[in-house]
Image (tube, rainbow, N blue to C red):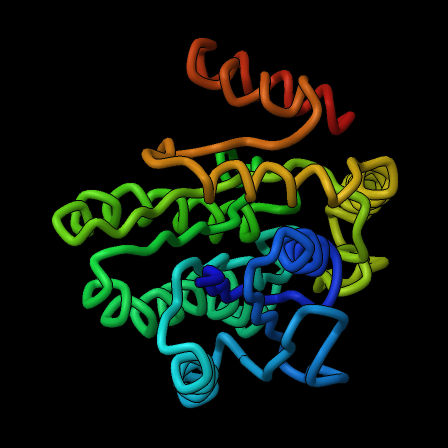
Length: 267
């Protein structure tokens, strides 16, 4: 039987690339978004799912189980970006991105685990970010949401071991997607003490996304992980220096690493 895959945030970018890649590999793929335009997107079955709405999550999982009677893989990809000086970022926007990037992923996990435990099999892949390994200037909240999901995954893996349910993270670096368009940007205020540095950093971030890797690279890595009997705790996908930056953080004194980031962002 074809393995059944649930992918959140599959209407664009990395999620869409993964969905179509896996459908071409003969998986039964359910892609989700808050407002899917069509029920079928090629070979991908698109259904409605809002990760911040418990009822929406429950209904989506119920739909899949009613049609397939199994869920073999879940790829928690839905997320949103956020930028801004920490001092000036509105509290409600901070909570909104945590609800999407962190709590939303946890709710999807809880919705599928009873089925996976019953099956005595399943794999959950949480898409985090290389930004989640470090506190980045003017992206501190985004880094925090992805870092939290990575740490939670480490704990979940050990709790799920006895049920033969696998869990891992995949941390992408910069990819050529429309994430910048959907990101919440705290406004650059004329009277802000952060005006110049924030504006320059924001432009630099957008340039990195525009020059990012092809989303198909993420799709191929995800597929390779799915085929692994014993997935690693964490995977990173990006340009060499992006992945190397994580290794540097482990070995350099904190203040040295901080200086590297300050130089990189010209701060």
